[in-house]
Length: 311
Image (tube, rainbow, N blue to C red; front, side):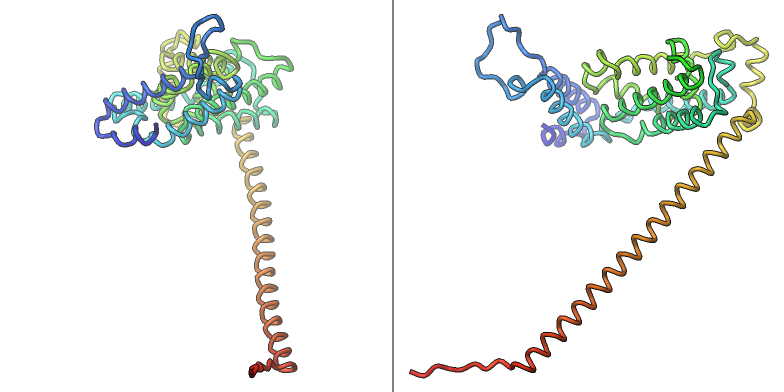
């Protein structure tokens, strides 16, 4: 299937139509006929496997196809999508002053556990654009939401409600400002297995994340409970650092120090590994020299004599 699709990429529109049709066919292969319906007695391998095996097989096929064709189908050289991405990213950058307090939910970022969870959530959102398979992009969204859920729970000492989750997703999305957000959401919606987007935890998180992204796109003074003058004044500010609270600065510095410590540990381990590798190489060379010397000594003590038999 991948080879057939890869041969015809000259026309973006035609390529998109073929890939969408192929992915719809692929996702439709998971549908098993009802027990009472008449169907061909020759079942395909997907129909004979268990539901879990079918899902795993479909995921692998989907990942293979979309990874191979990612550069050809993502954005499809659509200038409208590129402009939409840039516009949304600039808009999110102008909202960098938004805090949990403005969004009316509790988040104790001065707490190390909460700060670490928020940092992990932001990192997960930033990873979305680096992934190629739609299921991997969706997994990044799920990972970010899981970290956010734990951060809110650590702050409030109770499970997060829907309002807090949406507000939290708005906050970490603004904080991360992930590149090509619009195109990535469209890509996931278009090419990911529909089952993943309609049922289960991934579907729940993705739906909330899309809602948060839509809210950010249309965010204005009334949605934040500010006056128009206050909102415009904050939007015009060019320096994000001017609106960072002391706790945010402290949390960022602490995160940097932790990262430096981790890097130092990794560097130390790498040096030890190199030393052991060099020592092993020397031992191998020494063993080779010693072996040659022993062989020569044995040949000298017991020279080989080749006797020819005579008839």
